[in-house]
Image (cartoon, rainbow, N blue to C red):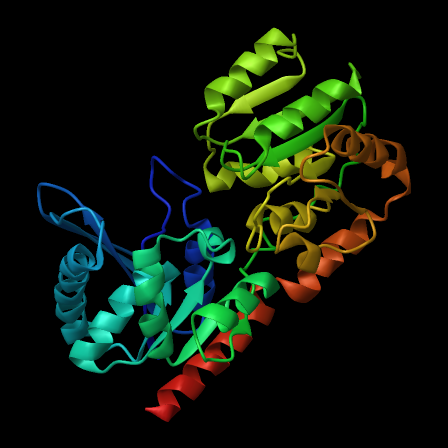
Length: 370
């Protein structure tokens, strides 16, 4: 089976975590079948780059096209994608197209109209879950999902939103993959002095970095440490808060780190914190649990379906006192948490083998229907 993956999300040197879940799925699939990832990027000078690693090949093309500000302009982008795909298809003869996000779905729909190759779509977008996606994008989303052979969502709430508003398909829930061979706990016992909290994500209002900083400051506990990794519009606000509250010795604020560095970062922490308003899945939460970290989370659409009760604490999205209390609760109960239960939950539900077996069956069913 030859699989083509279309996505506007995929890691780059500048943004190593951007679309890391798409890369993880592609790598896992390539252990079983030939996988080609086709990435179309905007640029003035046209160029094509191909990198192969076993059965996984990433084709990257830079091409000039206008910004996707309406569907007419989006069709120009999709046509560029089609020409790129058509040239690759002559050599590879793809059996199925797997599209990620609404832009990828549009490209798959456009190519399917031209060439008849079946496509499936995985939706990850929190803007769809929160119904804040631009109206012109919502209008085309319906047609590209209806013409797909199968629609997948990474979380329960997202699947409900899709079924209620954008498609008559029965949306299947297929979580993102975590490489449990890479994201795994160290065997050494951690010294809990200081106790280390970890946050990885966009520095914006949705992810709650400022709410976390305020809750951490409210602890008034010098024997704690907070590691924040991310980039976004609230970075300067976060820096100013850290300075104003004399937290520089306790809070480390870093830009995005390469994926290869993350397992060691998780393993230096004692607990992971996610305070999102909207979270379709929460890949960093699963990575943290795979490294046997307890979780503090909000009921934001994804995490409440992925964490386990043991060692994981639900907290408020906005009440700083309650969030601070959750931080304290994790600290005081940490020694009584069976960390192996947290790790086993990920092995049972989010390891590559369990997810890929389901995905390959979906591919075969879709191909047989053609």
